Length: 217
Image 1 (cartoon, rainbow, N blue to C red):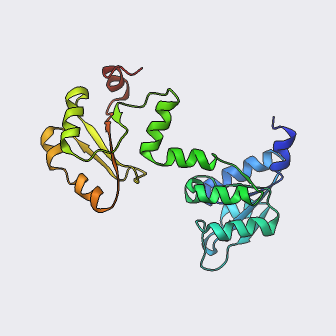
Image 2 (cartoon, rainbow, N blue to C red; image 1 turned 30 degrees about the horizontal axis):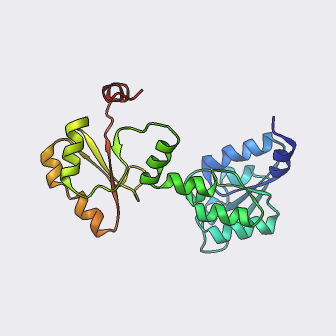
Image 3 (cartoon, rainbow, N blue to C red; image 1 turned 90 degrees about the horizontal axis):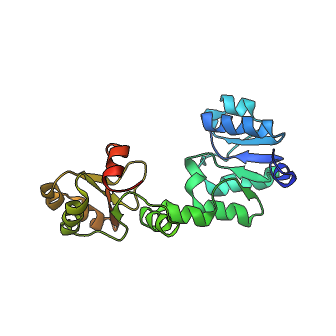
């Protein structure tokens, strides 16, 4: 059961999302006895989410679900006490989360600090290690040379994955299966040209077998 404080926060919840994601949050807010507020773009005017929400408001012309300023302005105008971002869109924007908090509106999601720590692959590995949570074998620092990959693979075996710290959703990952691929991969040049950083991890193809083989339990 929610606490009294939580119930007050959830009285008026703006849902900064659309589609099935918004529908799920709307139903949850309704189950908790709150009022759901939904911003929408013109193409979503007749959507199931807009019809189910207790209140629905059009976003300004030319804006969308990733327009942090427009969403926050609407939250203020409608008296929203909390913003739920769902996932995608603004849910991973730590600056938006901080702006919501600074506006005196409850942010339903990870703290901005946690988002910053875990939104970058290098800092996420370092955070896990400090917390005593063993990630897959890897090198947390920046990897810039094929020799580093080859030395790592000699200890942990192939395949390994070079990951851009600014990547996400499967983007920016290069899987290497032998020393020749490590020497010839364009990943280093591409990352350098784009000002990105690479980290290195054991690529897990069969989770149980791979982790047991590396001594990770």
